[in-house]
Image 1: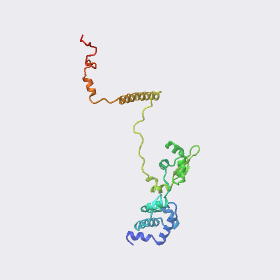
Image 2: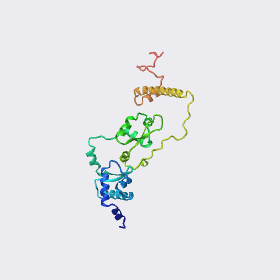
Image 3: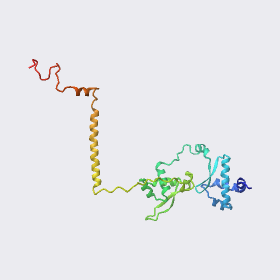
Image 4: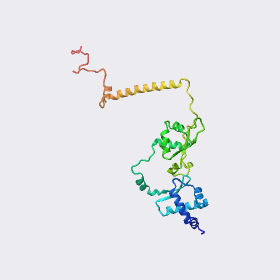
Length: 256
């Protein structure tokens, strides 16, 4: 056939279709084209065209599963549109979410691999042994060798299952890390004893702040004067302080 559709259909022979679908139903991880070509004893291009034809066919027919290229190979997955039903059936009453600590450990391994447990602990600031063991048990992280240093600590990296979970074909598709490095030259080191002097200055400022806070609290604790009371006090003559009967303070009853 001369058209593209007919050409694709011609490559996807019934026997090839049956073989590809049978293998894809039993694999527990993505299988690459080269492996399929060796097993089926056909050209890699023919296998590639057959996989693309199957993937297109499943989408057009609205099947409950799809064929995707991920993690360097091909594998069948449930259709995203049926995720709610699958989750209800498989995950009901279970919690498979990673903790924040596990996510941080996984991110460090993904971007720094191969990396040792000691390096992970240094970056996070806490011991990473439990987090690494958790990720290994989930199949997201695996041992990839040993570091050529005294003691030869184990090196860890992510697995193909990690790529599957993210839905990416390789580590180069991970989002780029932001540049958080400081700009400009580092600040100069303080002179000998400078840290102690700076600490003393900060303590003195803290004491001053405490005294100021006490004064503010004292002012706020005083009762609020009545409206106009302060203005009346300013307008009053301080020398016109009279006694209760109206006579000037200190004067005699007879005016002498």
